[in-house]
Image (cartoon, rainbow, N blue to C red; front, side, top):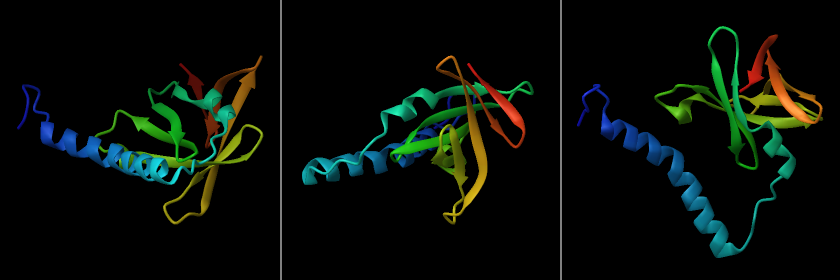
Amino acid sequence: MTNANGADAGAFTLRAHEIVAPAVNKAKDLSESKAHEPRDPRLAQYVGTYVNPWGGEIAVLPWKGSLAMLYLPTENPMRGLAELRHIENDVFRRVRKDGELAEPIAFTVEDGQVTRFTRHSNHYRRR
């Protein structure tokens, strides 16, 4: 079924299910086993939306005990999601689909606040 803008509601529903179902299943498994994955509260400072001067927008969000990046807008969030692994201080690296580490993502912290990150020499300022 499509709406007046031509968007397919079924496709959006399937994408939402792909995103939410694994987390719901994991939460159910965790509550049953009473085991909890440790979360580093310091990661919350990096979570937010970042933009660059050419109009690119990236959301940094909590993901699997660490962080992930997602270009916005996207029709398939799971395909566009890039997991990040903390390396040291304010530096992360993108995790490739094969598990290997890729380019660094370096966050800039000024006066205790994350103000931007740099990837491939491109700066994305925090919104």
